[in-house]
Image (tube, rainbow, N blue to C red; front, top):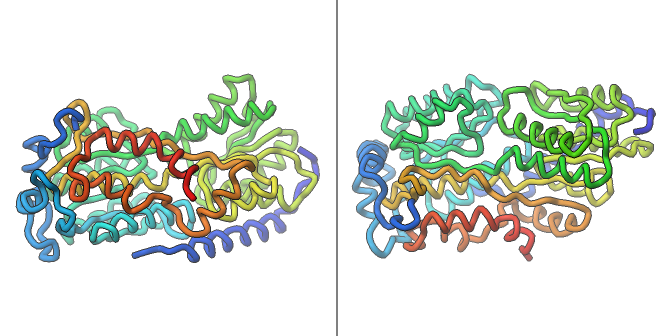
Length: 418
């Protein structure tokens, strides 16, 4: 890395332009509003009793509890199934990688006629619980929970159990093994979906080594953000296992610090061969600084995708990034719909499945044009028919294997999109 460092003022201006561009890109997109051998049963007796009898008191859902399951279950399925109301949330709005998570949830909700109430936690841990409490007061049929602060998930379980409302987990799970076991044993827990954040970081750490890098710096979110912590760990362990050295890891308390912290990190490590960013805001900041100084030669790798970041790959500023994990919540929503339709998908242990292996895609100079075209029009890259294959009301043959195949082939599906 050359010693010439772009000034903090210039980096701030460039990063601000990046944020504005990311926001515009997001606004230009359409943002619409089992056990495999025994999966035709209606789930465990406890799950059906607790997850249905008092799941909602809303008149909009036209009948509650087992009435829902009876109306939508059966041998043939029912594509005209009832509409359910779901409480969902997002860590904060305005960041493209988070906004497209909401969009993916809305795509499935619109396709299936669900009612989706998404709370904006405004990047504040305390609001995760207070927002959920307010949503539960409206008595939804189910909860789709995304929390970067995994320690609150035990409280989420308690709140849902107190009102007898089924729930699914999106992307992050409890790190406390006792809490996680309690959730997995809970009849109201319908399932969890994730792309392994550790594997996403590991993939890029291995790629950085393969590209000949020996030293690296890392920029990411605040300590305690489960996904970012795991991505950073995956990159660092893979990079150092192959003989590389991570010189410094710098954390930002929130995305607003990304430009300043990126500048500080680069200034303190001018000899680093490469940098890894564990999220889109941090990747934008690093890329803006490098783009503003043509003398900088370090390679940049990152997790999370936005349309303008793809342009940076085409221009040679970013070497590679991975993404696609924004559909986790939408897949979990499908599990919840099946549960309420009386056809719960169960894992091999007879409990709600934990599907933590969504295969994400990797964007490099070789396929950047392909992804630029995809992101110009959409962000889910899944057809209505593919979503419907996960839902009993459209596909009475859906099983755990259907989900397993969907997750494992997702990257290939996107690579082959026209």
